[in-house]
Length: 320
Image 1: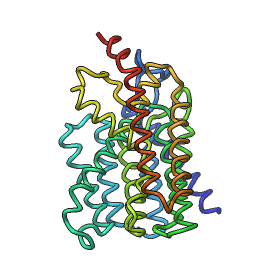
Image 2 (image 1 turned 60 degrees about the horizontal axis):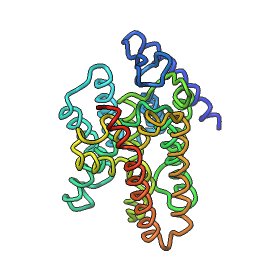
Image 3 (image 1 turned 120 degrees about the vertical axis):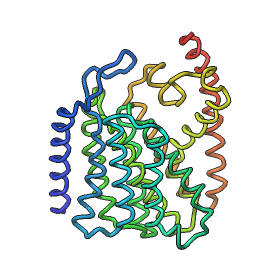
């Protein structure tokens, strides 16, 4: 237990030092008219996720070298983007490079047909982009990731061991510390692209290992709530060609926060709770999991369409 106490202190000190560095580098977010922040906040506080993985690797002898190499590429890319926005193609190319290194750790290049790589890469890039879009909603990155990692730790300990439990605990500590500064009405820090890329790749690695060990792709249920919001929002954006849809508010949580004026941390808590409840149902009905997932996906789709029909026209008219 004392090891986790030491690591907690190290992570907290690292985060506080980063805030000092962020001041010098002017990595701050200024209040905007449509942003509910009432204070200047530091950008890039999510670097603590990378620091947690680094501490774990140093402490326990780099058990996942290719994964950590990919995580380092993703974190450096994210930090560079926080410093000065990179061109989209360059950012995605670098993130994809990090993901390919992660795939090497997972054995996708040696143990599975090579045609698996392309769909896996597309899904993983989409997940990283989804995490990036969470960035300016207080608490959603930490709350959602906390639920996912807690579930993974539960599965790893009680059912099928697929990774080092200590790694999961250390990542949880980093999420708790980050959430202390972010899960607030007036956030002290945002994750930044460095945080989004880091925690996104960590979650993908862990969920990927679980799926490959169990040979059960239904464990993607761990990404279902936010994944469905992202997927349906993307489809809606394509159908409406954006200029005819809801500019800047294509995600449900953005509409709820920015147009319906719900507190950001309330929305973050609802998303995290919804994911936890859906997984609880998945566990309860595991023998019938594919039927369960089909019903949940259908219900989420209907809920999304109903919500958008009710609120998207209002948003469209307010931007005319």
